[in-house]
Amino acid sequence: MSSQLVIWNSGSGRAGEVQELRRLLTNQSADWIDLSQTDDLAAEMGRKIKDNSQIVIAAGGDGTVNAAVNALMTIDVDRRPSMGIVPLGTANDFAGTLNIPDDISLAVDTLAVRPIPADIVRIRGNDVERYYANVAAGGNCVRVSEALTDEVKSRWGAFSYIRGAIDVLPDMMTYRVDATCDGEVFSGLDSWAILVANGRTNAGRIEVAPKASTTDGLIDVIIIRDGTIADMVEIVASNLLGDFLACEQIIFRQVRSLFLKSVPPMRFTIDGEVVDLEPVQFEVVPQAIRMHVGTTQNATPFLKAPT
Image (cartoon, rainbow, N blue to C red; front, side, top):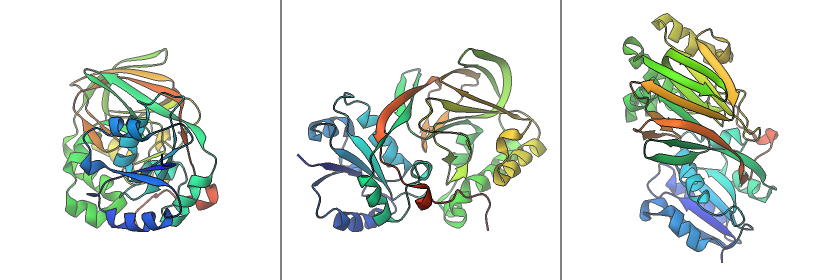
C-alpha cells in the first residue's frame, strides 16, 4: 500500500505543474488518482486506503479539495487518512485559509507537519446530502458565478467575482428567507445572498468570512439583506476595506447549524460547484478530517483590492 494517495485532475489549468509534484514525491511511496478518469472517487479511494496513517493529497483547486473531502467522509473515521493540499487551482481559497503556500515545494513541506483536526460542513436538502470544506454561496452569488466568462476570469483574475457582480447589480433578485441559526429564528427576511462559511475566503482569496475558523466547531452565516444598488456598492466597497461584517445590510452569526427556506428556492455554489436543489440544513461536523496546514509565516496574504 502507498503511504500517500494523490488526487489530481489532468484537465485543470495547472495540471502541467503535476510533473514538478511527481518529482518532489519521487522518494516517497505515492499512488495517483486522476479525477477525469474516475466515475466514483469514493469507491476507488476506499480500495486504495489501508489505514489512517496514510495521507490523501488534493493536488488542485477548490473543486479537487471538495471531491477529496466528500470521498474521505465516506471512510470510517477509524480508517480515515489525513489530508494535505498542494494548491494547483486558480483561486485555492481553502488552501489559503490553511496557510498553505502557493509554491509547490513549500506546499509539499506542509505534508510533514503534524495534522490538526479540522471541521467540515454537512448539507442536507431535497435529495442532497454532501460535504464541503470552504464556503457555500447562495442567491445572487450563483448568478454572479454564472455571468463570469473565460475572458473576465483571464483579465480580472482573483477579482473576476467582483467584476461579475457589477453586471448583476442592476437586476438583483430578492429572496424571501426563513432562517434558523441554532435557536434564533429569522422570518420573512428579504435577502440578496447568503454565505455559509467554514473557510475565510471565496472566489479568489476575497475575504468574505474574516472571523471563520476551521477548528472552532462553528459555521459562519452571513445574510445579505435586500436594499438599494447603493447598499450593494457599499457592501462590496466595505469588503475590500476589511469591514464587510459591519454593514447594516449584513446579519452575521456563528452557529452549529442553519435551517433555511426561501422563495424562490435559493441555489448555492459550493466550493465553486453549482447545486440546483436548495439545501435546507447546514451543520458543522467538528474535527472531521485531520488537515496538514502551513505556518503563518508561509501564508499568502488575502487580496483586498485590485491594483
